[in-house]
View 1 (cartoon, rainbow, N blue to C red):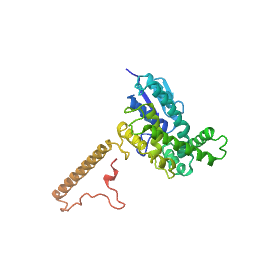
View 2 (cartoon, rainbow, N blue to C red):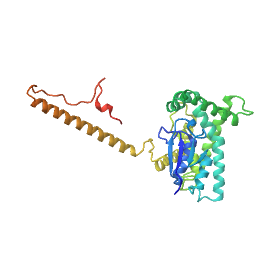
View 3 (tube, helix red, strand yellow):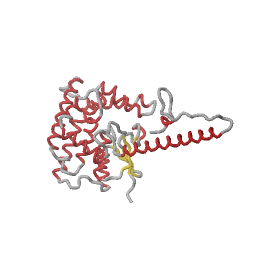
View 4 (cartoon, rainbow, N blue to C red):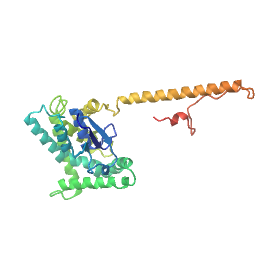
Length: 311
């Protein structure tokens, strides 16, 4: 029997199972290959054994970084690339390198460096999920690390100012998106009708840019001009994560039905209780008959018992 495997990663929002590109990449590959991962959402990287996210734990083995996690899954015979030719395998490595060199800096800038996006979306989102007092420190630390990574890879001559670096990384990112769109064409996935490692990496990088609602959407606007890449992300969310284009799981309807059933049961119970109280009062000799008010939903500042029911 295979050892259980647990993946620790950041949580999701905006219809995504995770907002973290590396976590999304591993989660998508696990879906493509059929790897039985137990996903554990964590709220800060210090809770992982190596301080990295995502991290895969299998018995006493701890692995971080998407490429190493995917290699481990392949060794466990969960291989999404077994039908690829040697040339397609080489193309996979080349396109992954392209993503990391051309698209990742713009992705980091969009989330962590662009001031309006960081202050209104990224920082509040992560801070709300990180326990105090780490919520005051970790988002800023992650922002500084993102900026340092951008400057380390893109800040050399002839790009001396941050504005020049920003302009260049967005030019590179748009060029990368155009190349990906041309390579995908009208196919469902990058190597035909079956998703592979390359599809997992592209999805992990594109889906956050595509779905997260930012005030500054330079990269998102360009991505939405490439409908085949948008369709690619939507198809993976729908087919492998059972999420619709609007970001809701089909099981959400079951949850709504269950909540409605709970509400109905509660109303019926309280109605029955009121009827019994009314009967008892009518039969009681020391109390004249009187009409009880029927149960109503709360209005204004009054609180109904229904409002206290967990959704």
